[in-house]
Length: 368
Image 1 (tube, rainbow, N blue to C red):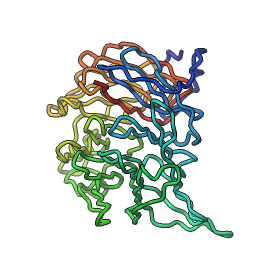
Image 2: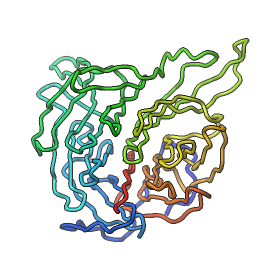
Image 3: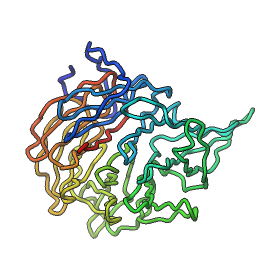
Image 4: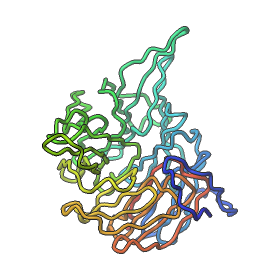
């Protein structure tokens, strides 16, 4: 096990998985009254974790190559969809039987389609949504084309073709779906996407936001988090100036959508004093949020306070919650998931996985 803190949060040292042998079950039965975590690990696994017992419940070997590690769980908590083949394909699998239920190629003929983390599933679990960049691969040149949004029917199975496709703005990296079916995308702005009308509208500016006494923010969204918890939040940081235009500090902020109510917020909440890759707001109290990378920090957003910070054993890119908000799960980067109490940030244990997660985020659901 790796015990030293990784000072450079952009690099992960390969941690060899434990010697335990993980076998894929023909079918497993979910146990009641517990959280389950779904993630992806190298070289080609979807892993189902029993968070209560802190152990792997099922491992599915999949056809798609692990790259870049995007994974999303359908709201029915039955199917997991992964981005594979260096972002050119999407696969869908039943997490209890490992049966492949869906596959789509984003590349067609000499038009290469690739996505980093632009994947979401409709609230009724019947449609898969994706955003992706396109390049025309010609004999003597590459021609960059407009990026696209596409919608697929899950019922179309392993040879699915888009039922809707249209152009979208550049630099969009993440999408998520609200309870009422509204699709949100984030990149250089926060957008709403309507597959029926093919309209893409700016819901909140990020780049070129024109905020007085602030620089333009720097924002990045690379991890699929929060649909089960009703949160779609992306960090940004910006420089603040005094009346004379002199720098008075850098601040972390969040562009956030409550997926239960569609409320959009954008505000600064703390000094830029620690590096974070992801943040998630509590599903019970949206004033409380947790951010992660080399440390785990608990924030009071309303009062702009750091409530507690603990140094982690190693870098964890992704933070996620139990649905009752009593536990915090940390993953991505290496081959273990760390579990902390949400109130005092006390470490409750680790779950070790068959292979490292790389950039794959955590998807959490509660089985009643």
